[in-house]
Length: 207
View 1 (cartoon, rainbow, N blue to C red):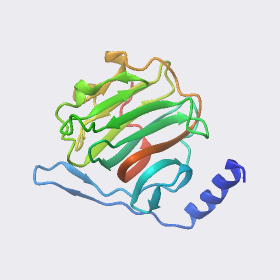
View 2: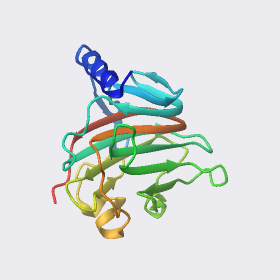
View 3: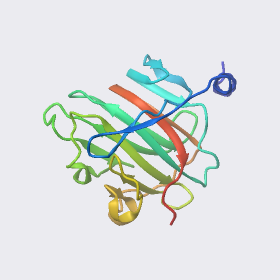
View 4: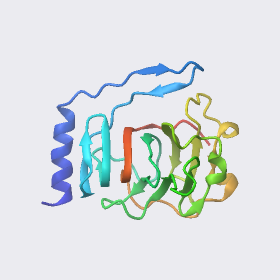
């Protein structure tokens, strides 16, 4: 079956389901994500997929695209990582999740209390030294693919201002991103990680 046929069936299924989201807060007032995982199709491997959880090893592509290739979107992904596990967010990729902007988040076995993070192949781990690897990881990321190279901004969990001053990573400042996504799809590649939220929405920062 062609991917376009799978995607069409997924769209029909998604339209028949009501996906709800709500929010709560920690004692410090920071947001706790209870966002549902968007409708998706397994692209490779054998990940276990449920309404509020994806885990195992493999890749999923989300049924709803990011819109036009030359657009910007906000991606929220929450995950739990054990030692040696990782996940990749593919943004503005083709329908095989290639030729896009990739954010890779890893918890190395040799340094299990810290994260290794790359975007577009560049190491940006230094911006995440304050993020505890042994707790829930919440990625809040704007991907502006209407710029060349693509502009990526990442904020800490609980952020509400969504400005440049509060970012963990701003690719226009660090020069980490040198390419532009060639497609309009997004998805995840999971290497043992447990994904508890994945949602695309309107981008938060306006250049």
